[in-house]
Image (cartoon, rainbow, N blue to C red):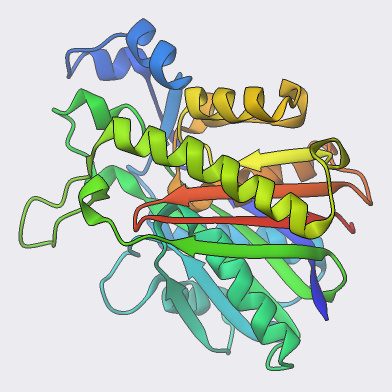
Length: 309
């Protein structure tokens, strides 16, 4: 038994912060940011709560799937942290939706959506659920030091969601972890809870690990890069995507990106990008998609699925 995606949704904060806005508060410029990251703007939570964004994305996904909240068997939220330490974001979303089912958060940083996909697949295969709501939602701006130009320009906030049912769409899914806190971490809350990142090490890990993971996944699935309609990569940095794209010899139109508008939204990147492609009718029934991500932990993962909608 495998799984199918039967609905997608996403929600972004109303406040957009462009590179020129950041240049007013830190020593940087639009040219410096864009040339190094490929980012022009990002959305930051200023008026909403993360629960509101996650619930809005979930409602859109449920509406497309034509599934009522009462029929959800499991809610999974991939996130660094919800609006509270306790209760979990999954529980506050459950309340907002009026659902009555188990709900839990998954912490795997930017790879969290793929970790959630694996958990959902296991529940569906075991018959413990028939319908799973999987959300990636992040409020990264609260962890940003806006005096650190190397990190404050990278991240944004937002949420994406998918509704999953038993099916035949998932062809391969594999996850990895390499415990290495010093490369990318956020200290405990009693300290200054800002993102600390060794940019060069993250770049090296991302390119080498993602390439190795993608090639391994393709080999195990019996596929070549040309068999994949679209490669959806974690939207961390344009230069990382460029490097992977060039080494796989994939044309840019088959490796879509939205980080120019959204920045790095961690676990929400992949479901937001997937929803954008779905809503723009870029995806056709039978398209093979490869999703790849990497993040703090260090974690990484690849999923290959056939689009069934």
